[in-house]
Image 1: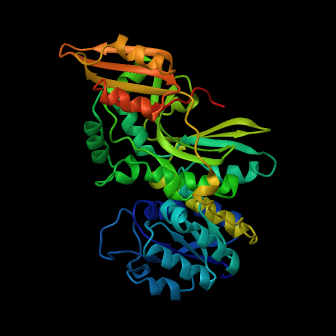
Image 2: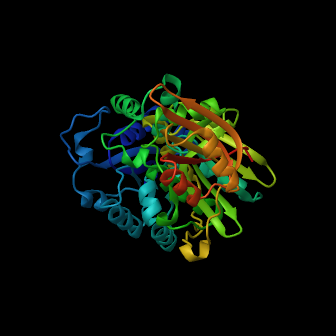
Image 3: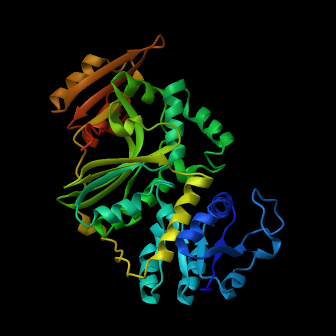
Length: 421
């Protein structure tokens, strides 16, 4: 490093990359005082060097060729281009050169993080990734602090702001999923292709990273229980509300007797649950420690400045810390993780014709089959359609199959998270 300047390269200059430049510029005086050196962006890899940008930058800094970044004298590279290929190859080459890397790329870490962590340790460089989970919420730093004394029994949260915005609007304005998705896209919350968000992939990648940090291991992504929100209807949202619950896309990682369990799925929360109170595009992470108890962290999980804030904090942190080997990441084979236990309680949403299924017949079948029913809400409409919401325990896939085949009902079940434990 230069005696007076820390030279930084950027891979990507989109929303977050622009936010990184703005943050460094606005906080330059504070950063210089803290680090004893000025931070200077000296090279930025972009797809189109002629594109008009929201942030002013010297054209001489821009390049469309990664080799220009690799051959430059950068001390640290900030990766905010996203994706796995060719990003993995770029990050690998930088680490092998001995360059520190700060990344906000949760997909890259979830799919290739085990290799990158090992490589960074081999070359004794920092690989920092606070911005990859929950944007501006410094949850990874908090976990590193608390893991020194606390055993974390579980971590759960709302890790995707797009889906939380959609669910909030569906409930508050009684709109359909498609109506709210269109609005989210117009506002810039959702991409033109929203599948990564609405099908739970984005939250799954973040959960994988949290599990590696908390437990030192994770399940392969293919073994994570993942369900999205694209099949949710206004009826699901309404009947949950009638029963005193709210549906949120909840990511959870916790220990069972069979090993760790990871899931991302629409989940029923009592409206008084702390996570049920998180609205709009906000994220939240709840930790359960054996000494500290329950902690809740909330804030904006995405966007230009929250994510850029985490990137620049990582950058400043690693410049003040000597290298220390990162705990190795590993994956547990599916056979080692054991079978996942059924959730004790669930909301069973039923919809079908009253001519083939009446509430009395359905309840008689379930009780005879040994299913416990804790709460019940039944709705009819003038078209002879039955809609019912049941909070149950002991409901199995076999019971669901009978409800569909013998009673002509469509069935949608949601796990219930009753407490904040």
